[in-house]
Image (cartoon, rainbow, N blue to C red; front, side, top):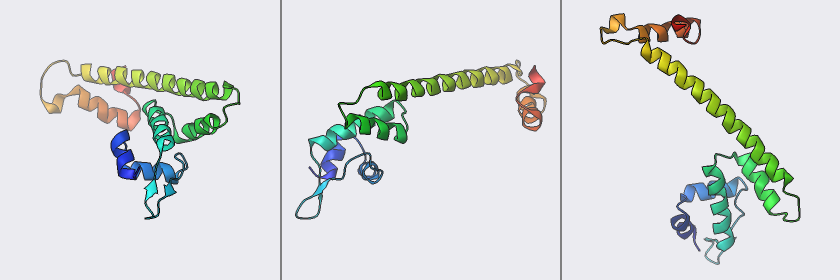
Length: 140
């Protein structure tokens, strides 16, 4: 199938397919006699795998590593578990950071409990103070 067909079938932009090829994530397609790329079901399956990994926010390096492991089916799956465990730890750390960010934003928002003038807005004041001194020092 041509790249446009693969794109339509997978929902992946043509430019992204070419990028994945250039990055070595997607194996290079054979060329037909007219010099067009000729993709097959293996390409479609690999592209689906890459997209699933991307939907889980795995890095290109991790995807590349998983592809290497997938291409060596006799290897033990401990290395796959290692990649997933490391990514889980990163996701957990990011969740903790986002929760702290939310709490900080809520504190700033609650600093301005009543409607008033911008000149008297404690939320704006805390943002200005936090920039100069550190995260929300004026509200603690």
